[in-house]
Length: 270
Image (tube, rainbow, N blue to C red; front, side):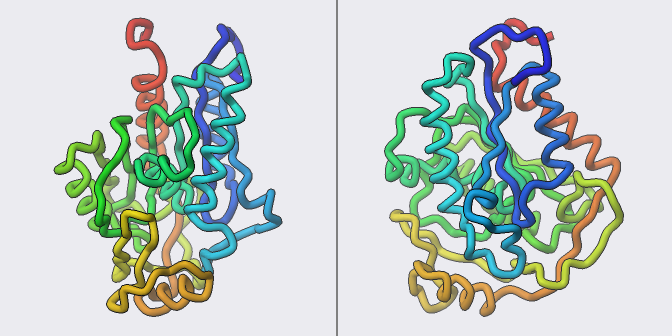
């Protein structure tokens, strides 16, 4: 819950971790949000399944599983009188960034069939590697933050996706940080993650039913084995991760302002 000056009910920000589970910089954002006056909720899709990391395999916990977890958590939160359920945002990093992004895709939301919706979606370096047969997103604001030099999920792929979605009426935008890599908002130097997938050559078609199709073969990736084969087909191993101080500072500032603008009553903003 917020640190002080609590006036219930309060807006809430639901956070979703990346492929290496919850990291210090994720928790720093959540603390910042609480200090700003928001409640926070840390989704535990990994710990609840006894999974420590999905780096190099991406099948133990998937984007679809985490989106379902997020909406079920939102449904439970409707019973908490402290939470303003009409003002709940979702944010996430990398794998969790994909959750934050595609939790706004209407066909998936309809299939989950829950009443509450997210009011804003903030995605940090999400996997923008899908070509959607059906572009149908909620009217909630969506924003992507990504580094120019990201080789896990490329900035150009996210630019293309944002362009496609915006042309169909989605309320989406993107910020690209110059000379920044994947995980630019963490502390610490750049290093190589030997098992990480570089997905720059991966583009999977997504059918209206949510099924991703393997490159060239158009076979649904509906089993862990097929998902692994699909990534082996298009992705290279060995990716760069690490912080960039200026991008880190800018992203924290942006995230705070994004949440204030989209969750708090605009009449009481500063």
